[in-house]
Length: 405
Ligand code: AMP
Figure (tube, rainbow, N blue to C red):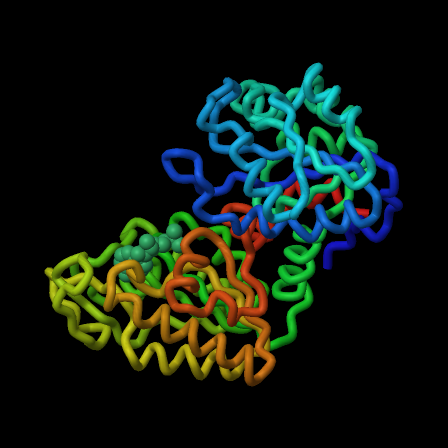
C-alpha cells in the first residue's frame, strides 16, 4: 500500500499551489474539446483548493510540440471550457515561465485559478541527454518558483520524470491531488492489498507489449485469464494450430516461461477453450465458433467462443477482485466484440450484486468497456494508459515516488 502525502496533510490557505494536471485532451481540427474526461477528473482538486482559499496555478503538457511553440498545441483553447466547468473565470498566461507567467501568478487572489501555457513549449520539460530521458533542472526551478506547494494530480503521466512533475517536486513539497489519490487508493486496493481471490484479465494484441505485465501478475494473482490476440501465442506454444491468426511465434518460449512461473506461484492461467474464427479481418465478416484444434490454415482467431465466456464468468464468480487490461478479441469489429462485451457486462453485474471490486485501465481497455456500455459499472476505471501498465508491471513510477512519505 502506498503511503503518500495527501492534500488533507497540508494547510493551503493563502498559498500558491502549483497543480500538475493532464489537460492533454482530444480536440477536433478547430480546437474544440471532444472529450473533457481529463478536465473533469481535475475538478475535485481545483474546487477543493479554491474552497480552502488557495491560489490555484494549473500546469500541463498538450500534444508533443517538442520544445517549440506551436499554435495548435496552445492551452488557450481550454480556458473557455475550463471556466464553464468550474463556473468561474480562469485566467491564462501565454507562457509557463518568464515575465507574463510571473505577473499572472502575482495577480492571483485566494480562490483564483490560473492556467499556464503548455510546458512542452520548452525543451527543458523533456530534455534528453545521451539517450537518457530527463528534464532541465534550471527550467524546473523556474517553474517551481511559481508555487509554495506542488500538487501532482496527473496519474496518467506518473510514469514520466519531467520538468513539470519530478522537476518541480525536487524543489517544492509535493502532495497527491484528489484524482491521483483516487487512482492510488484503488490501484493499491486491487493489486497491493486485494480482497482474495484476485483475478486478472489481460487481453490485447500482442504478448510482446505486455511481457513484464504478465510476469508481474502471475506472481501476485490467484487467477490470470489471457485473451485477445496474445492468447494465440500461448495456444501456439501449447501446440494448438492457430491458422492465420495474429501470433508471435518467436515468443512461444516466453509464453511457456510465464505459464511455468504461474504454476510455481500457484496462479491459475485461463486460456480460451473455444474460439471465433474468420477468414477476413473486417466488421460483419462471416465467422464460426470452433474448438482449439479446428482452426483452418486460412482462418484467424478474432474472439473467444461461448464456452470460454462461460469459463470466464465462473472465474469472475469465484473472485472478489478483478483487474482488467485489454480486449478479449478484435472488439472494434462487430461481431468480434462479443466476448469482451459479455465478460464486461458480467463483471459489472457482479460489481453491482456481489460486491466484486473491478478495476480496469490502460489504452484500449477504456474504449472497450465504453463500447460494452459498462464503463460506469466498474468499481474504478483508470484514466491512464502507460502509467497504468507500468503500475501493473510492478515498476516504481517516478511521479508516485515523489509523493511518498
Ligand atoms: P492492446 O493495445 O495491446 O491492448 O491491443 C488492443 C487491440 O488488440 C485492439 O485493437 C484489438 O482489436 C486487438 N485484438 C484483440 N484480439 C485480437 C485478435 N484475436 N486478433 C487481432 N487483433 C486483436
